Amino acid sequence: MITPGIFKANDIRGRAIEPNPDWDSDGARAIGAAWVDVSGLKPGVDSLVIGRDMRLTSPEFAAAFADGVAGRGVDVIDIGLASTDQLWYASGALGLPGAMFTASHNPAPDNGIKFCRAGALPVAAGDLKALAEWVLPGSGSVVEEPAADGRRGTITERDLLPDYAAYLHSLVDLTGIRRLKVVADAGNGMAGHTLPAVLGPLDLDLIGLYTDPDGTFPNHPPNPLEPENLVDAQAAVREHRADLGLVFDGDADRCFLIDETGAVVSPSVITAMIAGQELGREPGGTIVCNTITSRAVPELVRARGGQIVITRVGHTFVKAAMAEYNAVFGGEHSAHYYFRDFWGADTGMLAALHVLALAGRADVPLSKLVEEFCTYVESGEINSTVADQELIMDRLAAAFAGRGEPARLDGLTVAADDWWFNVRASNTEPLLRLNVEAADEPTMIAIRDEALKLIRT
Image (tube, rainbow, N blue to C red; front, side, top):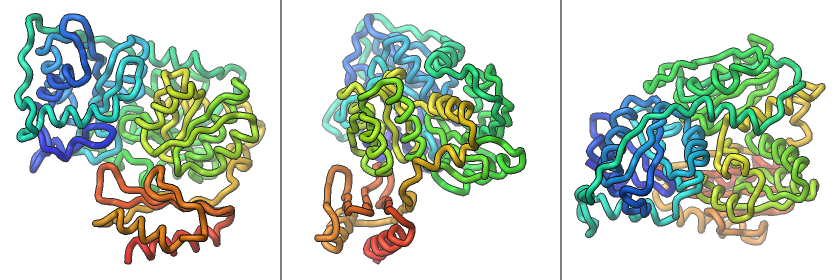
């Protein structure tokens, strides 16, 4: 069973558990078989690497998908339990296309698939549309699984966790840093699987929260973008007088940072910090950020002699820009961080290692270290349920006409000298997302409230 709603702009995602599931293991098998043809894999020649998170349906769905791929004559390497960035590592290190079974930060009943080309490159914009046309009933294309042409592919299990950890360690110099006390909240997600291998060997005083992978998420939802899901880590940082806290999402490809006071550090600030470090290593290099990353990032990049490329929101767009411009680093407001040394893919764990290196060499606490990058006041992302998103964006454009420069790269952005805002439609929900930034808090509040009134009236 497959319903059309699972096919999103960047991945597959939908409810996988009764009642009223959006897809099931038979659907996963059909998707695996169809993906062979959609992605151009050659039976008897090519292979595909797959991984899965700790969600209750992931073992069944991943096995069914692998069976569908093998039925088309393509070999499968199954790395088992993995974070999404561990799957990106496998794709890059093995030079194979990949499929990761995860619904990231979605609720426990959901599941999904993230795809990549060989070398962790993003799939083409039309690939998921083509996949949907292949497998959905009534699409006018082939509905049932394509028949295998001769040989059936093999399915081989392989543990790449030690190699993944060793590779991350090779990318960041952590020698000579002071011993840090670090709280790490895995949220019962895949960071609980990778943390022991990556941070365990380091000279840290590590305090783990919810490190047992559990697809029911018994402690808090795996979405650090929601402030209520950060409070346990904030409290633990204060209680243990830790130097910093790290909070990961469900598939551990994102990492959020908490300073020693318990305050959340903006992902834009982290982007600026790492960008500065990477430009020190490669003067004149290119940094990528999206349309709603803080202005602090392009300002820092230009001040340090680097080049800035601004893309639409979403890993597909950022990864494509990373490849096109040979960018050394990229960051998004949602705490996705991309590294050229990691095949241009996003990895929360590598970002965490960079932060540990910066904090461990600083002679001031983290709250002081980040001050130079906190030059603007952000609203954070504010979601509103909106039936006609284009109508609302047109209303905002008319209301702010003449007060700022409009742009339609990604939704609507209106930018003035000391403030900007962006509204864009969610790729997965009937929501309009608002982000506002200004040079001071009163201006930010005024623009935010005016925009919200227009959105919600």
